[in-house]
Structure formats: C-alpha cells, structure tokens
Amino acid sequence: MTIRHRRTLIDGVEIFHREAGDPSRPTVLLLHGFPTSSHMYRHLIPRLADRWHVVAPDLPGFGFSAAPARDAFAYGFDALARLIERFTETLGLDRFAIMVFDYGAPVGFRLALRHPERIAAIITQNGNAYEKGLSEGWNPIQAYWRDPSEANRAALRGFLALEATRWQYTHGAHDEALLAPEAWTLDQALLDRPGIAEIQLDLFLDYRSNVALYPRIQDYLRSHRPRLLAVWGRHDPFFLPAGAEAFRRDIPDAEIHLLDAGHFALETRGAEIGALVRDFLARVHAG
Image (cartoon, rainbow, N blue to C red; front, side, top):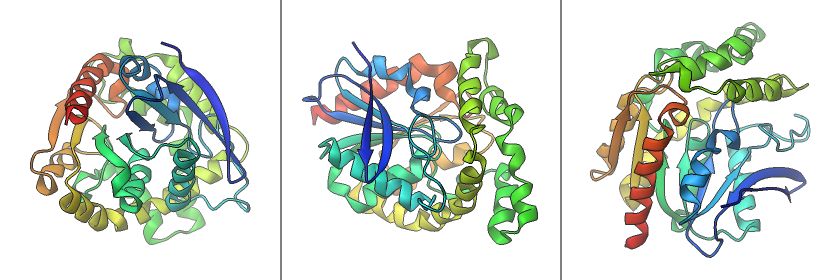
C-alpha cells in the first residue's frame, strides 16, 4: 500500500491531497477539521486502502494546500465546499462515501445538499449537524457571532495558540501516552504562518452559517436517508454526544458509537475506529 501526495490546481488554488488504493474501487473522501489537515488521517488511510480508494484533501488555508490572500478568496464554508466540490469533479469522483470531522462536516454536508446522488454513505467522527451537539465551549465564538467587534475577535486569538492546539488533543484522551506530539506541533507550525490567524478568525465568524444550515442538513438526512455511521469521542469539549445521538432522529437506523476519547479520537482509538469504518463500508458496498 502506497500513499501518494499530490497537488492539484483548482480554480487557481493549489489543493494538496493524500491518495491511496485502487481508483477503480469505491472511493472514500476524508475531510479534516480545525486546526489540523489530512495529516489527521495518516493512520486511517492504510487501514482502508486495501479495499477502497481513499482521498484526503487539505482545505484551502490548512495543511499544505494554498492559503490565498483574504482579498482574493472569501474564507467561508460555502467557498471551502465549492472548491472541494470542484476538486472531486477534477479527480473524476462521481460517487463516494464521505468521512467528516469537525470543519469537515459542514463542508461534507454541503456536498451532500448540492449533489445527494454523489454520496454513497456518511461517516461522522465528531462532525456535528445539530444545535444540541454544541457545548458551552462555543460560548466565546457565539459571542463573536452576535457582536463581530474587534474586541470579540481578539478574544478568540487564544484558540490559535500552541497550548490550545495541544489541549484539543489531550482533553478527554484516555491515555495521553498514545498521542504523538508531532500532530499538534505540525498543526501549530501551519497555524503560525503569516496571515493564517486572520483566515481562521474569519472562519470562526462564518461558522454561524453552519448552524443556520442545520435544518436543511436535517431535512436532507430525513429525505434521503443515507447510510450513516457516527463514531464519537464522548469527551469532546466542543461537540457533545447528544450531537451523535441526534442523527437517529432523522435516520432511525444510523449506527452510533460513543468512544472513550476526546476530540481527536483517531489519535487514541484509531484501530477501533478503523475496524468500525471497514465493517460499515463493507456493508454499504455489499448493497
């Protein structure tokens, strides 16, 4: 199994992605969250690539994808989703499962809303679509939504500091010795590049558009009933277990697994999540 690292120009923006497996097999699109990149899937990709074609892009402004200047690219979740949509079209991906995490959820669900026929299944690892899934950890960001003042914007800069990045990995982890420090170190090095902080603060503000979209996402889930697997770190400080359980309201046969893990559950429960995903995808593609 070989992971290839590729760069593709999409509407003038270079998108980096990791790719493995036979392109003739069913595709799984892995969408990362904040403050990380496709690097978060580095251990999952080999666990899937023997049976599936796996594609994991970095969103613009994240990882090793380009970060266009803010006056040249409107950093909002609609723009991120449209670029990833064009990315999938450029790669010729006309039907695929999506695995979404954190920011990857509003990107992936937008793909599903625009092209439900392209979505073979949904795997969500702490990828939220319900207000009941939002914890009190969102309070400072919600204050910025209500009043997008410079003072409220400045109050969020602490979320971009090394101690906050590391905390997202360590909080709720059942065994911190399983956490590889290069994960948050890489995330932080990429966050600390010139101009990235302002991009991230723009996305904090635009996250309110995702919450506003929740009713449409829920209607899509009820109407289309995609096969859905939720594997959730139950100790996530931002996305509560109630957000995972809520999927059953709209998809009664959704599969829900609450794990003894935090936000970055793949870092400590990677083998367990990999096994759940393999079993789920095997049943999806068996018909």
